[in-house]
Amino acid sequence: MRTLIVGLGKSGRGAALLLLSKGEGAVGYDDQISSLQEDREIAELTHQGLSLCAANELGKLSHYDRMVVSPGIPPSHPLIQEAKRNHLPIIGELQLGLEHLQGKVLGVTGSNGKTTVTLLAASILREKKIKAEALGNVGKSLTGYLAHNPSPEISVVELSSFQLELLQGKFFDAACVINITPDHMDRYRDMLSYAQTKLHLQDCVKEDGKFFLPFSLYSEYASFFREEKPIFFDEEKEEKLFLRLKKNSPFNEKTNLLSAFHLLSHVGVSEEEFATGYERFQKPPHRMEFVAEINGVSFYNDSKATNVESVLYAVGAIEKPILLIAGGYDKGLEYHAWQKAFRGKVKEVILIGACREKIAQALREIPVRRKESLQEAVFEAYRLAKRGDAILLSPGCSSYDMFENYEHRGKVFKETVSCLKKEERVHES
Image 1 (cartoon, rainbow, N blue to C red):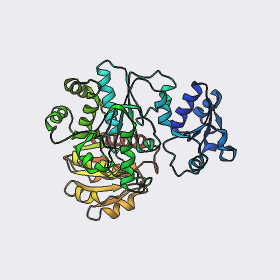
Image 2: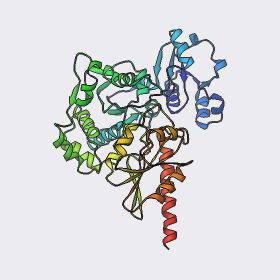
Image 3: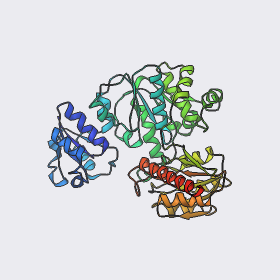
Image 4: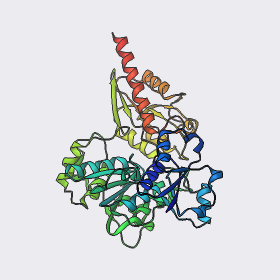
């Protein structure tokens, strides 16, 4: 079989690795193919048998048996449109991995919290001595993992809306949707089309599998569900269970915890086992991560917050007066909801990035300052802060205008706080 891989980022490289490991022919295309020629990973893939081609070298799509698309490539891409016209089978990188995956598979999606739920579920399964891996959108591409490893006993797969767009088939023994709030409005025509993409996960659950979601989500999008109802949990009625699980967390993560619990209950995890595993779980970085305290001012890194709702969550979770650092690449979101929520909570907002003017226009009643870099924003926030305040990086935007990704943004924030702490020590001495 001859496969054309479109997009040679992490997902596309994983797809190439998996196909080459199976002895299949693979050709790689990327809009930035010329700049990838010197990339070490790409050079190694070509050494293993991957062919690279530019747009003018593709030839007829009839030369290929199928197209594997990376999630970052939008459906409007000319190559995808041409493949559709030529009736060339198109699948996503995630589907390629799922087709080769054995063992039980759990699926997790949502606008916020899906990485935490995925990592938590895999961690609790490992506490039970089950070979489990967190895969997919969580950081390890599914295909890249399978190219070098056998299938886990249980795979917990995080799915973005981009990955769900092309997914066809019933792969999941159980799956959950944590929440749906506005995100990626630069890719979807409206909120309903975005929600429909997320809820497409129900179509990918096996006939004897289970599909979980909060009751609030079910009531909001009832018309999107098939005749057989999903299994929903009522967050208000399960307050007692949540309070028990929450005892070791300073933040309100009700939906995350209940989603993970119900998902794992399908594979035999008891309430006691879940509570014990949660106590030992280390939350991933860049998600409401406490960084340091300098002269009574607390610093929190929430760089993973790339949409409006996640910032509202972060602001609501911190009880101290907040100086918020926000801004970045605009995903077509609206920020007016921040104004009401920030009153009495956020003292000032320091804005960076391409979206800063749009956010400033939405926050007419909140004091706003603009800075050219994240480093400048951190120093400005600290200059304005008083003892007992919190400085929160929670951008509400993507990072790609200034950084490689949200991890890079969070790392720069933490490094800047570290430099600030060293400077304060010098001044004190």
